[in-house]
Image (tube, rainbow over all chains, first blue to last red; front, side, top):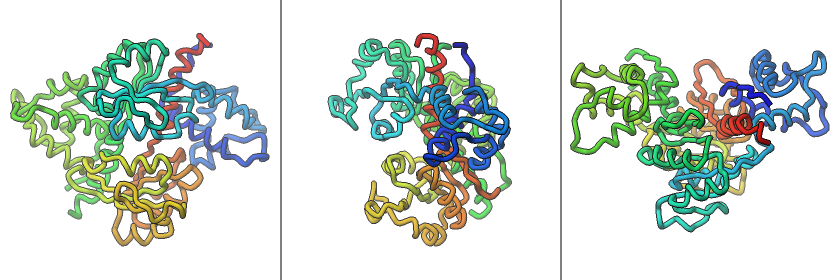
Length: 213
Length: 213
């Protein structure tokens, strides 16, 4: 299968389409048009058609998309029908909340184990996931062929953990630390942090209300 | 003070600069250069200079930036030195994890109260924050002049909650639901959801390993 690159923006919209399609009434119409989806999701219908063209054969004139095929195509594209094992490193507040989050399995991701350096939590279990010492990271990830790592350590530790993940064979890193990670070109990093989102929202309020202060 | 628009990308990098500056050794140099920051953060120094020019007077040749002034300028720009009260709606798994997250106060955001429709949790407290019925949202937000709302309800409920927030005077919405919200032009929405991030990461693994399956 040839590599078909899909833009990050398109990929980020896919779960919205998937949720929408799965929420359609059971026993309703077997087909759906891009126009109806666009109206319901308040998107442009040209955009919806372009996005959906990336994952399947596209809709047919006057017929639209077969709902169950489109669901299956999106799940296949996103890998949501195919469980990837992941590890998480850094069981602080954020790490703990991710370990407790129940939404990962729907997205085809299973955090199989977490790592931390803090001896007082090593050996414990959160939401059924064991916390192991970071010294075991290399042997476990390489033996289990783990491909995805979730970094929730502090800024200062993130690059060291990243290097260890890469050495262990991890190729997709979800980085919650506020630092730009240095990785080989064959490793993919997706950065995400709540502070960045709060920065955008807080700045909006500062700018909007600064004349009133 | 005139409105000085800063791009979302620049704003999202600001917390990284702020963390870096705050982590510098106490009693170290009073000044820092953009080149040193760029090297340490693995960014381009032109980028760093452009970003920092948005928040203060800029660095001086051969002197650089005064660290404490730069910290103060960034905090002011982001509103991190100025607490904004926020409300959260939807105390499911994600809402609960956000209520328990301790990092908000550092970012100048205080979730003062949460709302849910589930009678079994209304009246309880999570991390010191009371859970109230959604029927009280309008009166509380308008009386307390709440400007920020965090939406962690399901896809189907998000627009209704959004409309209620807007009617109550909220102008900045952090939306975790996988749906595009329809808001008046004077309301700002920042979308964020874990599923979108997982979509990007999982697709990378699907594409990378699809020939091996």
